[in-house]
Length: 428
Figure 1 (tube, rainbow, N blue to C red):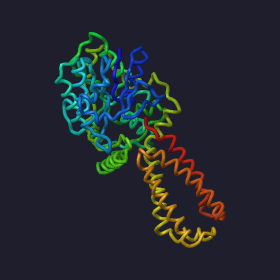
Figure 2 (cartoon, one colour; figure 1 turned 90 degrees about the vertical axis):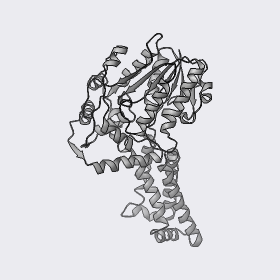
Figure 3 (cartoon, rainbow, N blue to C red; figure 1 turned 60 degrees about the horizontal axis):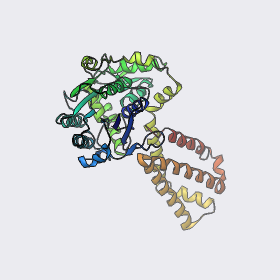
Figure 4 (cartoon, rainbow, N blue to C red; figure 1 turned 45 degrees about the vertical axis):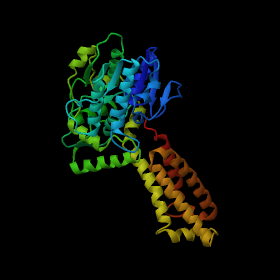
């Protein structure tokens, strides 16, 4: 078959595309970002949310036998449109499929979206479902719970991050979760791409048993080889602050799993009945314990879990560090900066110009690191500027190496932190 996979660089889409290729099918991937591996001629990079008419999709349907729509986003942010991705673009693609006689369409929605829609995420997912159901296509709608796999993204990554905490904060009234295995989800897609398989049905894809949040995190903690962690009730106001901070990060382009939408969906939980899924496909979803038992834990798994919740603080602290040093340089630290320039033999307007230029550079780097799209460039510029500061400071004011506060001795650790930040920058 030749299958169009929309959202092919995502957690679920990438796994589906890989399995299809492994069994000899041809895959045309579509996503906002290119594939994580080597560039591929059969991968189309485009902003799905901007493809809002059937004509926008028609060129990508030539020779296509089936479509799997996995594209999704958690919450509104710059460049992230919930209605655009989940509804408008999806409806346009489905209409184009009907016109091009591409009958088999599989849509990924969210568990519970047919029962209640407390957030714009679930409402737009439901709208996409209705757009597909209205067409005379061989459609299948899959509504997975929180998906767990060998890799980690979104909610599954958050569960691993929570497992690394020495104390587990439990949000009040968090709903139960029936986490589902990525391999079981992929097998379901492969099943419904087979010729002659029934269509025009919607299925929940939950794991076999509902578990409270602390139990799910506890399973991950045992798998990672760590002792059980004590739990503490997270006050509602503190949880609200954490989710709002995640929202702010989202407006800067960072894909945080801790956001207001996630908080509201967490209260609802992610549960359902797996019996119709098993009856339709013969697939019996595995428990989290059984799935993890089949995957030996690695040191990389422990690294990821330990770093996941530290990662946003690393970038936040670095951005604030550079921004604040620039502000201090032209504010309360002005005279100190001029004094250092004079000590190094630079006087008058030249000294002032150097201090102002350095401050502006620091502020610009701080803003660049804070913005996801420019974070890599900001980190590289920070490393370069830090090396320049180190060289100039050594030449002009060498006594700083003997400073009791370690002004120059702190620079190498700062450089190493920037290099570490570059290493954990990518989230997919």
